[in-house]
View 1 (cartoon, rainbow, N blue to C red):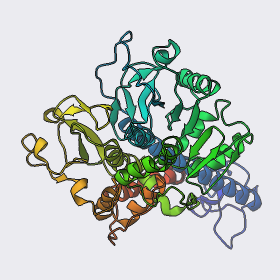
View 2: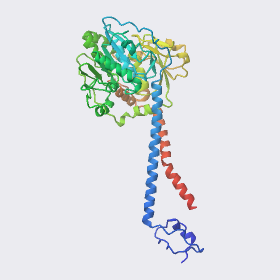
View 3: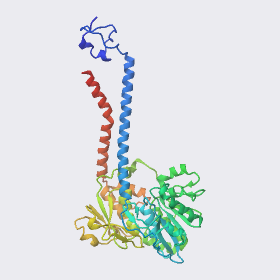
View 4: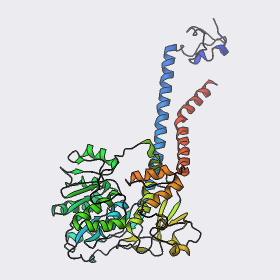
Length: 493
């Protein structure tokens, strides 16, 4: 019996209204035409619909993850490029002799990676050891070329590995190995060889924070107990079971190897090393100046065992969403303390990620309190600055004429009695970005949390960018379903 084309139009495409019988394969339209294909069984229709929807869902999820992952990867790449961006500057002449070694002093070599080094890991021990006349301290790299430190800093090494290998400098008694950007890379092969050679010659090795990731690429930690930055220990334990990994300790000593927990722990461990080599009185004298919280000669080394949690979102968002960051000038003045510089660079630029740090000075090079050479952009050529942070200064006078309208923060004048270089920075971050952001930053440098203001602020910039990113990702993720539905409707017209 002929059926109406209008009534059967959907059924002949493989669909039929509810409570209607499927058309007979021999049915004809009232116009005399036969259906173009046999009707599809209901069970097959259901399976096709299920498969189509499953495919669209999977496609949407893949696109969603790809967009979020790509967004985060691009942001992290920008962050790393900003954080480890060496300024062009003079290099030590390849054939120029290094500063002569001071006789009868303990020779300390603080290694710097070609690709970049965590600032506090290097500058913290440098500031501690160089404060004592019992130690002769140098930064050492593969050449005299400027190298990047985190937080946008750049330093010119005091010596090269060749200076030691050629005999121009005596073999070091202590080698400090900070975290570097590529611990296992071919570019750092000479650094690892230097560690092996120094250790074989009797040098004591001190790995700071993720400097342990460099040491596991050598033979130094085989059969030893060691620690590292808290978030690295699981991976190190799995990849390097030949070392016994210890959690919850500020530092771990095993024979001639000393390893530390994260970032700021290198300062405390350096005071311990001074106590061992130069005596308790000397360590206490330096500790009074450094003021690292709770450090005493015989104090316990126990610290909290940290783990990754959802509460760490300020760190993750800050590291992956650098766009729109304010530009903070990091004002460098002659004779500034190394640890004060490191605290500002590390916290604003590398732990809280609240600002893009731009080292500025009145000259292109600044020598710190104990002789470290830092490069800077002349403040008159720095471009737009949203704020100026001047570590160790009691006045903004050196920069006032050049940037008269830029807000200035002086951590040294904001610090209370007994505060360290890190405390006023953390308090400032709590006031500007919220207490939780400051707490997370302290966790990621393993620094004892100081009293903080009770601000409940939200890092507005990163939250806004995150919301925009999620909306874009969701839009892309649902696009396969939208396109599919649009095409189906077009075919039915």
